[in-house]
Length: 145
Image 1: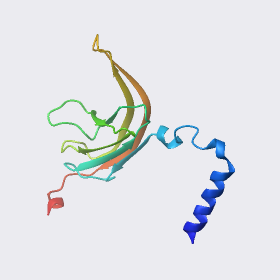
Image 2: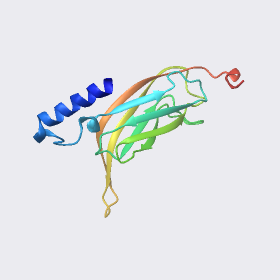
Image 3: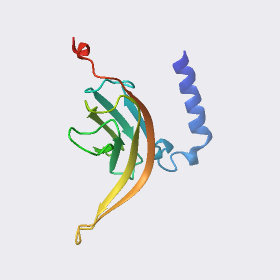
Image 4: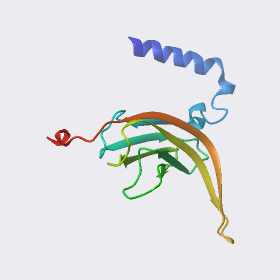
């Protein structure tokens, strides 16, 4: 029954304004969204990052203090994520065993990178930003048993 009512409402909307159909790209294509799962991983776990950037962007950069490498003095690490033609991207990122337990913030930047072929200089333009919370729990051996 709901499907019939929905189809009737869609038909009324389409026939009511024939000149205004699809004037441009849908508004969701210009939005920036970002999701990190799971929210509270242990040290030495893998998190999954799902994101959407505006259509103009061709790359995304995800960074946090929860991603340091072994032996590195840097507390903050950035990881690149490639995007599809529609601006969607996903990546698995390892939470380091050396990440300090507690609350961290994960930042994402949607960028458009253009390279000059003659001089090989890169120009990076930031098109969108987002952040998500992350809680890192202490490593426990019993999580594997």
